[in-house]
Image (cartoon, rainbow, N blue to C red; front, side, top):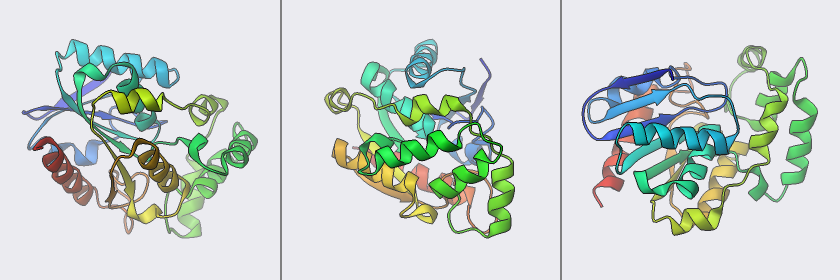
Length: 239
């Protein structure tokens, strides 16, 4: 497993989203490592259930008792699955924009739109337009980002997946939803709101877009994102 560990302190596990890797959070690692032992890794192939089991095995191997987890996008979906299936090693989950589309009133229409774009030559551009993950950016930025993305049919297992909400609520694990200010009203913001509602959980606004932890001039400030995460961890873990 491709893992990366930084810092010294309580364990903080970072779970990347689709297409990510152990390097996805590089821009915030140093800030977080000032107060935590930060672990991130490149997830294996598979759906939310398989990846949740993999994360549980990693927590077991690390000897974690009550780890804090920050997870984004598809990583947040697998983290919710992890809480439902293996809550005993988790002390807190901060779920950043989990794509639980099934909770939205227009879920059927959105699923069809995803089905239409997956595997197409312009799937990346259609994805960023449909989801609004970048926030308010110019057309050139949108085109460039879309050109660097490809959405394959494997996304269907995430789009159609819904963890056991009752098991999450019964787990006793505190869950906090997070969403980027720059994507207010967009699909990832809406799904975060929907998960917060169904779990009766708080939601915190973070700076930046769907990738707020990564540099993007004019939109994202990873340092501000990292400080927001530290403040939220501090407030939640001191309870």
